Image (cartoon, rainbow, N blue to C red; front, side):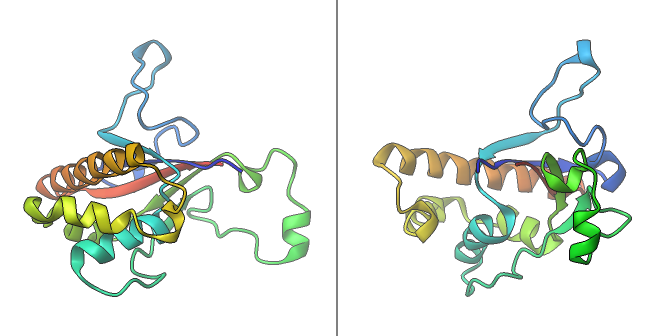
Length: 172
């Protein structure tokens, strides 16, 4: 299963959830899509892979709740189905069964990324390449990951400067 993840900043939840089924990196006025300040990461999920980056930058132990992202779409403000019966009763076109999802990242994740020391980023990126999820990576991937670390740190800095939060748009 392919998962695409895009990190972006927005002023609030309402702004973050505009046209939730559409990519955050597209900017096409012809279709009424306004692009966000976004970083396309493909398969870098917020809880595990980004969480490990946040742990390395913050020099703390990784835990699954370090980046405790809040699901906004499709479950906000109504919760996701809670029982097997509720899941089984979903229509085939339910957004819970695939498609787009939006998560709000906690302030501490934004601030940890934003406060990263630029001189430490190459070492952090190198350490990040050693996680299990990157065991398949090549030397080209390692260069990409350093660039990605810099892009995510820059996005977090711009979000912090504007008193905005970070969001993750995922498509499964």
